[in-house]
Image 1 (cartoon, each protein chain N blue to C red):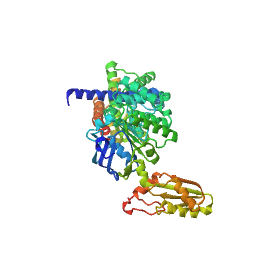
Image 2 (tube, each protein chain N blue to C red):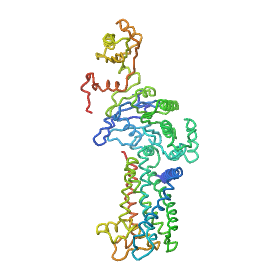
Image 3 (tube, rainbow over the protein chains, first blue to last red):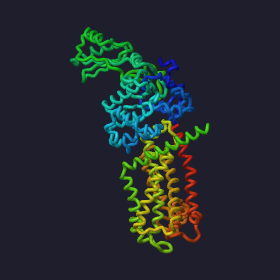
Image 4 (tube, each protein chain N blue to C red):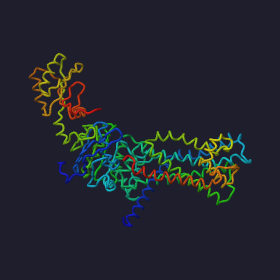
Length: 332
Length: 271
């Protein structure tokens, strides 16, 4: 898998980067296999964007080394830039130009020449369903359309590696789905995508590999299934009568087996508890509750939220539960 | 590096610069408002300063105040040109366009060179408009074609230098809002000068500043080349005694400082 550097397309070794007081990257190691979508998952300020900026030759690391497609990002930055595309958190477009003009200018700057830049712009607008708005000023585009145009601006010369820095932050669900479809299409074409996101859901939908990143280092990595298996999830039970809540809580505490006290929500008649790494099957849960005499109207196993992933991985104390690994606490 | 590699590097840089330039000019096409503003500035200035203040300001040695004023307005328009490049670059910075440019295999210096080239073309256009406004209100160039072209050439040199200052400040400003706040600071630069009134009547310190202000030298240079009234006399500060030389010198000095600074900034920003 990712450990074989033979087919690794993006490699980082011990990258450190400090901005004034902030240690943005604190020894980042990463190996991205070619031809996959690799997700960098982490909260705001974890160092995801700095990592992407290092790979995209925008930021020079203080220590460590990084290569993209075999080229050093510092010493061979020009070669790297020939092979990458970057779409950031902003729509990096000229609002006072039309979509078509934006793409043509970028095409010329990629040295396609006037005629080829024009053809490529038309082609991309057609393929990614923006032809209808090609001659409108970008100022008049919706947020989703801007982001899509921004994304296809990074595809003018089919990049070997595409960096997407939080491509769907702030987008509505429909626009998010459109971006996701576009990304899936690219991978089918053979492009490697390195994607940063705050949303576990997004990483889950798109990425074959995920690295969870916090305070500038990778704290866990693997396939989504591997990560979820180590993190576990939550189980929610809604009972038909408030009187049954205590019983349900006792049953869940046994069932979940994590030792954590279940959360009881009397208003919604809901009991909720984290479940361990071993996957629970829904029929087993229902049988167990039935056996304990709990009348449940709704039972569900939820995927972990990013908060939960993060809490579990960093061992930071949640408001109600105790820290499981005090040694790994970091100052905030 | 072999000769073909160097020449292809140059060609690439040039074509990148042209692409950045045409991007800026294309924007003007979609913003007729900006072209109208270019028209409006000299018109409003001539009316405001020429007729409102001009009625009460005597010219040393006599003469028409609007003829006295026009060279100063040319210079003022040129100095305000700093806002053009400053705003565009700062906005691109804020939107992340600069990051995209810098992640592309283009020449990084293409952005400042392309931007200043576009500024120069726009400035040449607005000089023509401004001159037409001046002619309408009674301003004339009296010293023949050579001196007149020399005057406009000098203005464009100054404009090019000022545009590089704008590029550098724009690269420092992180977004358009910061850029907008720099704008009002340019006013004193144009006001503490001899554009509107002779400097003789100013307090000594202010007069010294005004006399050494490049804006004053440029204004006197234009008055001289156009043959407009109000040339300063007597014991003059060096730049006012040699206004053409001083203006060219100031411009070259600004270029010598801000071209390398800007290019370096675009190469290394964020590293």
